[in-house]
Image (tube, rainbow, N blue to C red):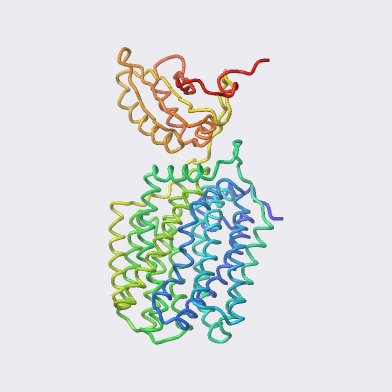
Length: 550
């Protein structure tokens, strides 16, 4: 059994390879690369098999959509599962689905009944496994490693996949050309055993909540609410969705480019994908240097321009060497964009909701890629491959320009751990579902501090509301103008407890600033109330509003 290393927290923040010193991360990372190698070999075989058994350009392009659409449909639910259950077991369940899809595909090809729709269905099943695994795995990085190592870890995860991308497609082309699709699918099925074994053998410590699990519907609602109210996360997700819609054209149309424009076969297809992966690898290893040269937002915009140049070059060339160089440029832009946005979302998300924010990010970006596969495949079928690639290049330039309206935040390390909270003593015995609860906090603010106070109150409203506060208001006393009252509600007593457990140390710094502005020897006065209806009497539990008789 591999346990998490406790020495990891003392590593220097600048060490790019520091996450590898943690045995849990190293074990799962390595197993993931083995699984990715098999998946890429299988992807080459599936794409080429579809191109040979189907005359429809749209069906070929839908191979990419089949595996990405489940991420769009299921990731938000998977993120809520990852935040409410053991992320380790969620990862294990996801890899079980991927292994089931690969094994079924191998058997169906071996028995000779693999048709276009079965191929798409099994790709969809594998996509369900990725939808379940990816939010849990990426959210677990913050559990396994120190926060300062998250950027390096996410970069290593992307670089690792793209190292495999440099080898996997070429290996897939060779296996496909000399041994046939059955061997490629068998290799993929065997590679799925690696992550299942690694996850089974590893353990890592996770800070558990003292509160019971949320209902799934409420967990999803709270995750969406937090994401919508977080400007930085919202902008990053919108940018990712647009980039996915435009940039997926490179991978979705590549089999058609090889078949129709280069008049070549699976080996060339594998070589071109290897060029894409090599460009991503080089960009990943240079990521720290590039981030020192310019801002993260500008770097992501440059990456979109690089992908646009790749699309335009593919539309105009029939040369394999030129195509390899173009795809290397596209691969570099691909990695820089996804790594930059992934880390920005992780660092902006508290631990209690990180699985859900990541899942929403994956869902919408995957939805963009699924829609893009359909759009560019339709354009290629109804017009021409060149038109599709040129249109995607124009769309990517617009995505680059969108950086002015939807900036990707810098990678800043902030304390996003939930702070400790002790529930106040009450004179009434409340059940978890008792409510609504009304909270009033009274401040005394001198006239000269009002503008500063209002500034901190705007920030407080934001952090309280995205953590679960409802109907937040701020009132000023007309008879004693120095008295200001902050008021908000939560639906139940349990929601009040969850709100306070969700507030991070960074969030509570706002309360410290407000306390410093308060004029008085005693701290701001807080009143907790429960709303009570004045309608006709109805049967109520005697424990809601009074203590039971002794």
